[in-house]
Length: 142
Image (cartoon, rainbow, N blue to C red; front, side):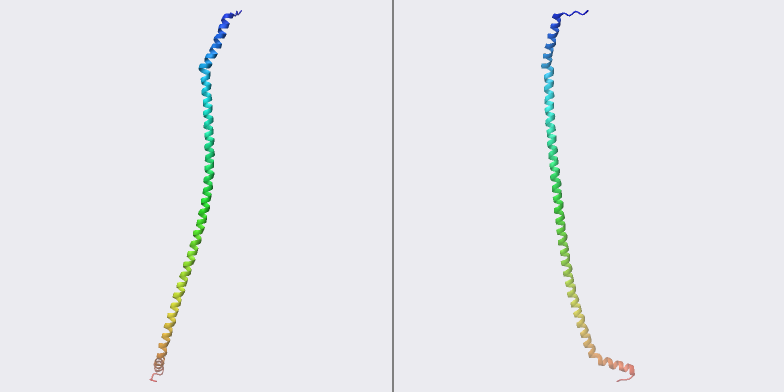
């Protein structure tokens, strides 16, 4: 049979309670303190990550908005330059056509003048030519 020695039991219980207080002061409290600090640090880092993600999302949205605005502005400038180029092309073509028309008129006038001069000279020489032709056809002088 087991016999219980009460004075030793009380000494062992007192020893156990003393060890609980000593271990709590020396071991458990510092460990709990480190765990609490670690938890706070992790929460702080998670908050920093969330803030950085929000900032990144806002920056991405701003970037996309500015890209869209830049594209729109670029298309508008491209259309304006294209329109200006077409107007300049039309102006140059009109200018070239006018110059060509003026040159054509000058050439026509010169041809008409040359034709009139040739006709005048030929009129003056008609009698000589007709006499020469008649001599050749008749074979004698007229």
